[in-house]
Image (cartoon, rainbow, N blue to C red; front, side, top):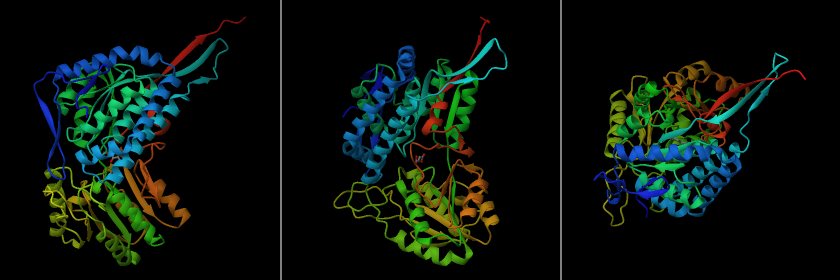
Length: 484
Ligand code: SIN
């Protein structure tokens, strides 16, 4: 298993004298040591990306696309191996990890397709002796800062469109989950990536940000993570006017109208909410149900939620894996305690889980999937992302009230609602303030669609042709044409 950093086409262990230990969150067993590089290592990665840029940006898009497709093919070939590494370091159940590898590969193939069709424009000119052309060009060296919750997909979501556009990149994975990123980088080399086009460094997050924003060769940074960190990055970006994409926290509402298919709504909620043990930026955090179907919908939900098995991600039949850290557990417990203090009723869960260990000593990091009734605006979980397998519900009486509740958060990443009324479906989609709206659909994620938020959830879009806009500049070429 490779554990070094990919810099300039080689796996190296820059001599900072420090390393990061990667642990399995299910049992706290150490899995590997990766380098904890200093400023030198990051600077080497910027040098490598900068040196590779002229050659890569001049490479025909069809050849860049071919390498991305080969890379995706290798990931699919090795999906089982990559998934088991992801489950070990991240905790999610194996089936989800394998799904994430396929999801990650699809970002590479989607970006490859758009690389080949990246359009410029010839615009009708107002003057007889002038022609107007607008072309798209890669912005240059880019940096990616990726999160631990989707360690392969969020990296692919950034590097696919960056490399497809002709940019080169250096990326820093989260310190909890660098092994999935390193495994991907290894396959990139096998796929034929020229040296320095993609570089991966493992290091302190603050040092990485400060170093890349201080180097004027880095023209774009894409970050997925929390809103407070997003704010800091905006400040750092101001010095060299670096372009940013920020995919920040969410606080998704999930609305069930009185005319909804209640079973479909319950299944949609469960698929979305409990994916990755609730550690997903787009998962619902607030459930609003029409008063006339509240009891029935909550009962169906409770029955389904109670069946979700909790345990290590590699154990048979498990649906909910461990939380990533003790801090994550502390936040989940704080939200549930606070909700109870505000009068919420626990319909199921509401406590730590003690899953079957089969002889293994498990970490105390498993939480029972939880359904709470009596969600109130003053509760912490109504204001902040819980990032765990917990959902609180409240009832509403009118469509206008539901829209008001859905829009009551300054975050605006994803939102969901279920209705069988076609006109209502359109009205509500237009009224909800969010980058992503799931109408009768809890599974909105796909590489072909624009993914991103509004408000405190950030800006920029990842996926589909929109992703390549983020990594390219439009150049206007005005050509004088003499009359013949
Ligand atoms: C995220 O949680 O940040 C990404 C989830 C997804 O792409 O589905």
